Image 1 (cartoon, rainbow, N blue to C red):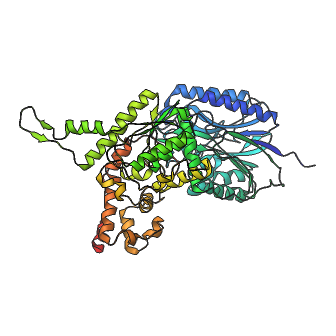
Image 2: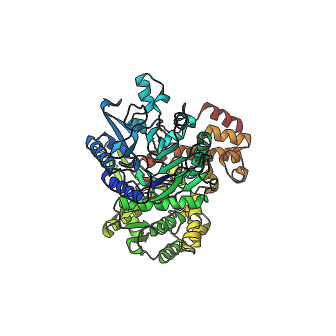
Image 3: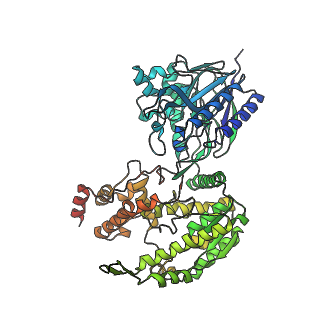
Length: 628
């Protein structure tokens, strides 16, 4: 007679960062449900008790004590349910390299009121073996790992990677990066398989990144197929942040059979559980090949909308003020917030100056009407005139009379006065009156080269669109009209109108004038600087241009020759934007609002920068001379 399958509950929960008590209540509640449905094992995410991205909260002994107490409470409630959960593992007998108590990113396995340790392991929990120290991750700042422990003990690291013996069999428990082993010198999963594991379990705290799940399916499918073992992957949902960058956790938990096929899959961005029955060998779970990724605009919409909604809830934001210009960025921001808050809690403000066209003012009004939000107009002509009248031509002198200078505004300064008046004066004041916060509508293209006004449109409590290139803003806005609203809520005119700040005569859309950026091309160029895995520099760009392969290398679907008629104009454009990206753009990004990350290398903690100034290599200068 065949043995009963192992019933596993995949507990994809929303983890509240820094609130172990609330997370523990949820964990115990899900354990009760799993027990009622006769589960043998329940698996929670990595760091399910404390949360993951907590800054230096790990340095507070009181916080560690609370995490330990919560872990003990889960242990006491385990009963006959094998409970696998992530928590901080504290070794009070040792110190980290920073002199503080030693901590591990750990998986605990509780059963019948006891913690089950790894077989022959030196710790009462499973410690993370591979520590990510790239992008948003900074694990080695706080946590010890098995490789360090092995080096300290003078033994082979592989000898410390062992499964956990449980009544349901030998569990090969891993923590997130342990399964992404391809860039490391050892594979915890393959070691666990060789050590007799019968089921691989991966607890994850893996932030959403566009196209990440496609790669994860390839890596994990191959891992399950190579080991021949079923693999259960459980990821958390929710939002967490590293102060300057806000990350969404999408869940998308999954189970793979020993042939690498997907046997169960949980929806993204939902706090949800799923029960699966894993047959005992030699039987296999049924499975299928991974589905293709959703359309990019759908994936980006889901991440931005979810991240914005969860962040404002976590911050206790009830009302928002949004400056709307009639353009696509502010229109998309307003549409996203309308998905998060009731219309009476959203105040849309159009702030025209003498440079704003009737067309964009009408588009702003149409958007407000379509969304049903509160709306007002606050013209800025009088206040801008007051500022200019008071300060343009003012004389500044040292009190001893030795130095004197008359100050005046150039065209750029006059533009920035308007942008700052809108944000620092109007939106800030209306937010106070409305009991609200106001948004930042900047996109990633603008943020890359600082094409935005510090203390002006680069202000607000959250930059929801700042990880979307301008062309992606259009795509997500179109997706919302087509699939979310199923109608023209964002006016078609906002898609059609020439992108323009409308801050001066040189940006008059009625004369076909607008932003100095050619977005389809510059998005590709800037992406190669920021998001490409081996990031491009001017040396790469000019080399590809000279070789006639620039379009292919940066993914531009067009002809560079149609934009730049000769090398001189191409180089002038390249240097203009590179100088801004590496110059004043960094200073602006340092003071920008937190960015909601949805892709690789969001500005902030992910894309880390130093104010080094623009630099050009010798090879760049040599190629430039040849071209000119």
